[in-house]
Image (tube, rainbow, N blue to C red; front, side, top):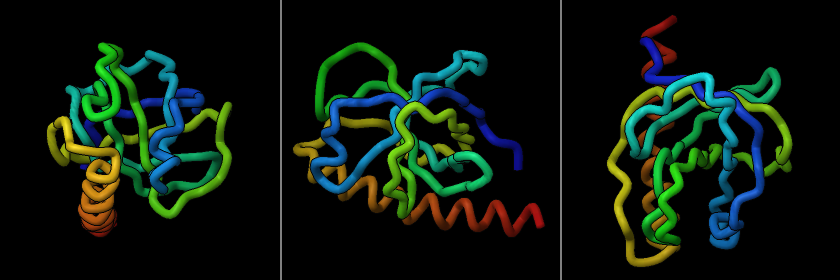
Length: 132
């Protein structure tokens, strides 16, 4: 299985809204070496040092929390709660999950990301099994 994209960069501070509802994200300041895929939510793998984790990555705007036009790359990393600010990580984009859409609240976003993570785990597992 060929990944859609690989994005490497430094984890920077975001607004902290995700963390406030138990959904912290790694906000990536991309090196810009790779072109970003179209806006949307993706199943991903996140490599930090020599460890790899499943993730859900949003590439694009954040219509539920602000109206800024900037494209962001932010990843919720499965079962992960370490301080990685300032670290260089690689996010490998595996599968498109859904389009980004405005939701009614940050809690609704959190619940959707949990469903997205279940799907990302399944897809990552299937991809790993197929490549073995």
